[in-house]
Image (cartoon, rainbow, N blue to C red; front, side, top):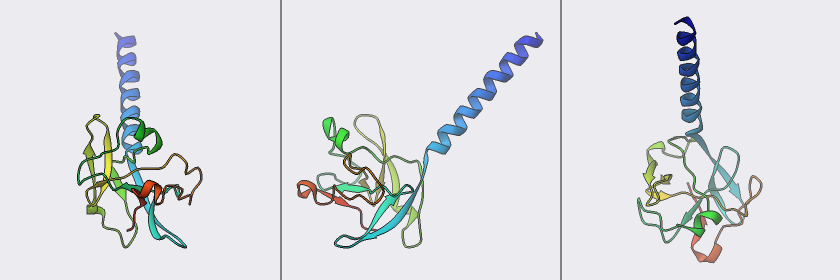
Length: 135
């Protein structure tokens, strides 16, 4: 019986630790960066640029299938924002594929696969439908 109690406590500790990791991974910080020719734009806490897709509509992503390979989703349940950005402008939607995605002012947010280091903005103006997010 004692061995069973120890096993249950060990399993429960692992479950609690896993849940804590999930909730920590569900948070992100958004920052404002500036670049000549672009102006102010939003990034994640690592400095990776966030993008909007002109074909999206409020609360609905038009980027699916192979598009998501090139434009990975920005997904965070909780977003911490700097001065000048309104936290209530961020929300989470459930996409048609069942994945969660963070929105800003109703529009889904993305990364660009060709942005490899902080400050890269290779997706700006891509195909005249992808743009950095102005705060």
